Image (cartoon, rainbow, N blue to C red; front, side, top):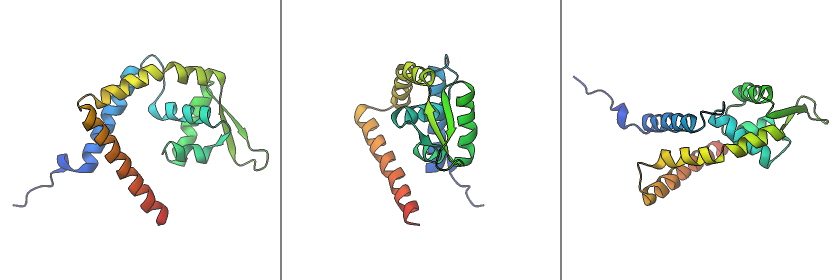
Length: 149
């Protein structure tokens, strides 16, 4: 009888498990603020680049464009993001973090740093650096391949 596929040693499975832990630890550390990792990332992009359009924002946080609209709508409903049509192309929506959104994002920085530290806590310092370098290489390599195709 053929042996089954060892999915528990498959890179995709292990990356998904690591992502589950990353989100769980983020949510634990930021439990006092109703925000997801993607919402936090979007706020920080808008703080750094006010007036970013929705499509560019979705790309910057590596989130699909179709779903990003509902995430942005939730941030807007909380009063953390302001959305306006572009004056040149009214189909294009431009986004800004509100002062309340900026304050929330800034207030979360310590908690997010704690979450990031907890994510890497099973690793030694050099192992954590190596993992970050390998993940960067993996993601960059796939992005370069996708850009060529």
